[in-house]
Length: 370
Image (cartoon, rainbow, N blue to C red):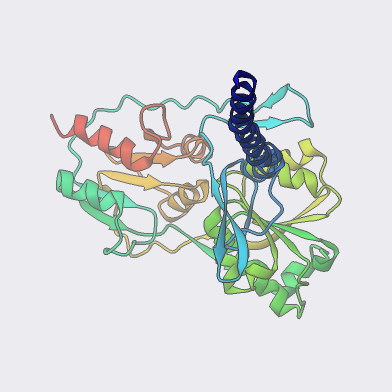
């Protein structure tokens, strides 16, 4: 009897132990697919952290050259697209990378601009050498006028005239021999397509467009269907386009410019050893300022281009500056003020004020106290 009881107990223990073992096997079988899910995570990483510029089309239809901060897959109807969020560049990062090397080519420092120590008397009337903005738009100069009770006058000192087809042909530029165009402004876009229209040139769909900023890139839709074209844009400087220009080294670039332009882009392309053609599509000329009787009515006259200073000299050859203070934006404009024999009182950008409105604000604060 004792032996039978022992056998029964053994059977019970065996039957209880059996499901426990089978349960462990089931748990292992369930847990095993989690280990196989590792390749999916690897695929996700490859989408979210690309090593190079992203080739899939962006929702807006434009390609960007800046590093990508975040890429998310979303569904739009039946089709999937990649939504790309661009990291805006830091303003102090103005260096050109050499091909896969750690060393950099630093841009030369801007020349030092000295401002005169002319007595700072009260400022009431300001003449700004730009076209008058729309009053409904938020403008820093309107805010400045409200803050100090100023009288603002907007008057453009220069005007832009496009070259006609005959004048353009004298440069012997074959537009269709170029596979890429660098657009530095909306004016460049307008006059490029105007010349093509006057010369009856059909711009091919394969043409690539490299724009200095996003606004210029979107302005192209006035003339082309930009969703079907290869368009790249930077964030305000040609240096932002260094990566995509390097990738398109085999292309011959065309740069539509005015007769008065900055040589920075040319120096940049020479450094990268890019084949390019610089073509004058429009010119800047002095405006007729006969409607201004005397500049002595104004306390400050603000200039933004060297051509504006030239227009001042041409329209007022016998001007005695006296208490009229001249404000200049940009190094080339400031240097031209001194070259033409005028006194420079306000300069921007400077370390304290990167904008002209900021420089005027600081100057008026000090001068209107007295």
